[in-house]
Length: 515
Image 1 (spheres, rainbow, N blue to C red):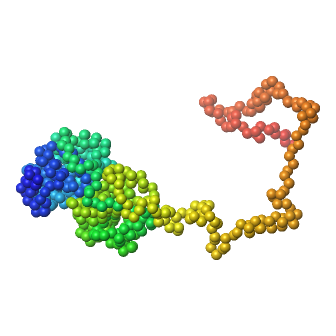
Image 2 (cartoon, rainbow, N blue to C red):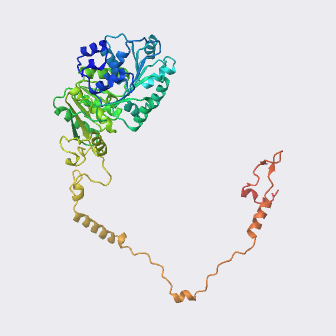
Image 3 (cartoon, helix red, strand yellow):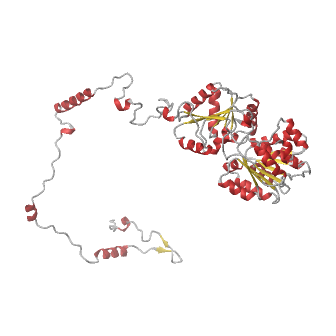
């Protein structure tokens, strides 16, 4: 099957041929005819299969007729990250060379003024992230009542990033009669619920098993220490020993670790850049462009760069941290081995990563081979040095802790006989001073128990019986009568002064004064 068999317009076919593509991918071949037929589509496919072109090409064909109005975009594409949104713009620029369409990019990190100007000119295609889109809507600069086609891309990533409430709010703003295209790499139960809510009698297009890894990727596990220093050393060794390393992506779980690892690799002579969510938009764009152009061969990134980024010819992927979610592993290694090319993926495994590794292997349906032996093949703490290992009180490192006492620096170990001799000398010296050692002191005499006969001859103990009268109560009443009555306010309700709480020393009788 060729692109000409899908029903695309001549302008789109000319642009596709100019880009060098001749045959559509499975997701494109199955989804494009249904999009052109104005049907809702639920697309499920792994990354790197051409999902972006699956909705870009038919949208260009459909937008050849009609005209955009100010502040009312004709189509809306929602992306979870700024990088993915910018990549969709590049697809429209590549395949829309023969079209005169207004494409607007609405993302964070850019001034509102330029974006407002694009919206006022009229937009045929609006590509946005959910947060910035809602900002424009709340400012009254955007109306969504003219949207004819809605695209929700990377829906599972939207779920992970917490954008689902924003997506639900945006869907309520667009017309009910719009056409909806819903794409996701995985289909957890929450995504299934959203698909049922947003789509109307959709055509399900599934070209591969959800979250499956491409067969062109060579995957390997690398055993390493749990500490960051040992992991960084293992990563540097992998990079130096890797064959055919043209460029590589290094993934970390936390944004803080991205910056630390980038500085460490740069200090060891590697040409490396960083990409994470806390960077401003200009720095993120420069880092991504430098990696794409080949100027920077290594890019350390968080999962913000793992989903859908079209970075051609990535030869290696290094997972510095095992991802918390098994699906993220597939998206990470999916940056390599794209379009039939071969790729390599290395994952550093330490103590405590066994459960995450089992979830990954269960998801992809196959075990991942080890590079140089598994965790059991390494002794100790897998590369932790004695200096970096925390010392515990009362514990000794190594096997010598169980066999012989540790010798201090510059001192011979004390023998057991010398300890015993010193103890004997101490005891003898104590006896000479006329004092017994504590262990030899005579115990205190115990009380002598009287015989039963003598105990019986003793008179019985008399217990004073309390008279069953009201003497304590009488004394209390007498004490109360001595206390002065509390003064009250004019209303007669509120006590004034100490009242009944008179201290005892004030109640003592005062002796008469002698003049």
